[in-house]
Length: 314
Image (cartoon, rainbow, N blue to C red; front, side, top):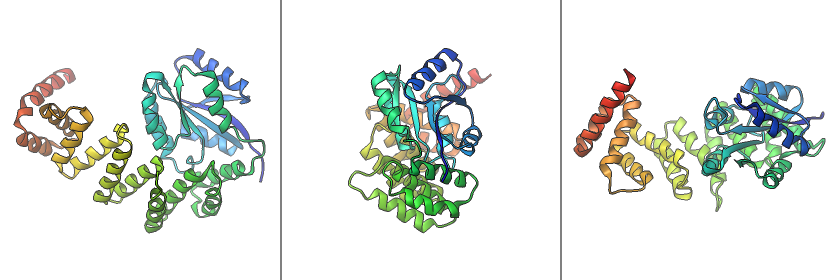
C-alpha cells in the first residue's frame, strides 16, 4: 500500500518568524522532524501527493486572517475530512475550541503552549510507522481531492471501523453521497449517527448544514435548536439559526434568540437594534423596516447607529 511520512504543516502566513521557530523546535523534540508553513489548500494537497501525512496546525490569530475562517476553508474541502487538524488559540479564547471541534478539529491547544499537554495531544496524532489505516486514509484523501468519489467510498467504509477515523470517515461518506445526489442515504447516515445518547457535535452541525443546503428550513432550525440546547456556548451556530430565521422573515424568533445570546432579556430594544443592524448588512431593508415597525423603541438607536456608520464610511 505504500508508506508515508508524518509532517507538521502550520497553516497561515505568520508575521512572527520567532514564534514559528519555537513551534518548529518544540515539534522536532516530539518526533516531527519537519515542519512547514502552508498558506492554501493546494499546498496541503501537494504534500498528500508526495506521501506526506500532514498534521495541520491552524492558528486562531496568525497575523493575516481569522484562524476560524482558514479552518472553515479547510473543512469545506472534500478530501481533508480525515486529516488531523489542531487549532491554536490564546488562553482567553479557548472557549472557541468547541467551534473547532464541531467542524472537525481533533483538539484545541491554548497559547502559550503547555509543554506536557501539548506533547500529549501531538503524540496522539503521530501515527506509527507504516500504520495501514493512515496509509489507507492518505490514499482516500487523494482520491477525494481528484473527485474520484466512487473509488473512495469503499475505503471510507472500511475506515468507519477504525476508532481514530470513524466520525471523520462518516462525514466524508455523507458528503460523497450528497455530491452524487444520494440525498436520502446521506440523510439516513447523519440521522443514524445523531441518534446516539450523546451525539457527536460535528455530526449535529453536518445535519444542520445538510438540511439548510437542501432548503429544508424547519429541519435545519430543529437541528440548530438541538445544538443550542446541548451546547449553548456555541454561539456561532446560534447565529446561523438567527440568520435562517431572518431569511424566513421569522423576526420574533430571531429577536428572541438574539436576546438570549446577549444574556439579558430585559433590554429588548438593544437586541432588536442589533438584529436590525444584522439585517442591514444582509441587505434586507424591508425586514429592517418590519422589525423596527414591531419594536419602535429601537428605532432611535438604530438610526443613530446608521448615521455614525454612514459618516465613518464617508
